Amino acid sequence: MKRAVYPGSFDPITNGHIDIIKRASKLFDELIVAVLVNPAKTPLFTVEERMELIKKSLNNIPNVKVDNFDGLLAHYVSKVKADVIVRGLRAVSDFETEFQMALMNKRLNPDVEIVFLMTSYEYSYLSSGVVKEVVRLGGNVSGLVPECVETKLLEKVGRR
Ligand code: PNS
Figure 1 (cartoon, rainbow, N blue to C red):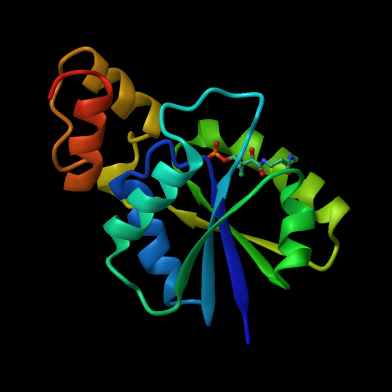
Figure 2 (figure 1 turned 120 degrees about the horizontal axis):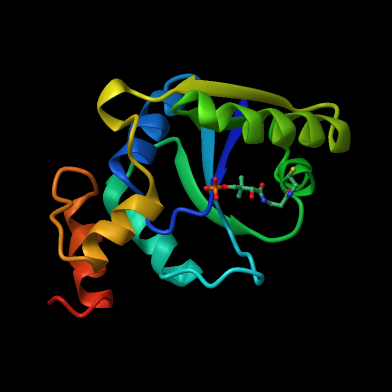
């Protein structure tokens, strides 16, 4: 049984993340979408809200679970007995950070493999950060995030 972890901040989940989750879920027996609880950052959404939005957006893909973790990803991956970490790669600019994280995670947990999926072309410019900024400044993000996320974003920034 191959179990993979797809970690991230997911603040909030975008259609780019969903594309990676759907594609990764076909490659592994089980995929755990793991939301980082990072006390050093102030996310727009609480971890509970982020997990709820992920669950609603995925609409019950049978082999996908949603969880959260704090501390080191390498330790979490051992704890849940996963073999693989999945990450999405967009532009070349993602590569340096991802390369550094991959090597550190491999050093901390030599049993884990890190697998990168190239983003689908239509989501290559998309990030949670850009989506939040566009919403804050009055722009339209429909088609870039699931409807439930768009609604919550508009509520959070006081536009609905
Ligand atoms: O969605 P993001 O913000 O790009 O995800 C980054 C994430 C959560 C994968 C990364 O920050 C992470 O794994 N944090 C946990 C702490 C950790 O393990 N740090 C060492 C990795 S080099």
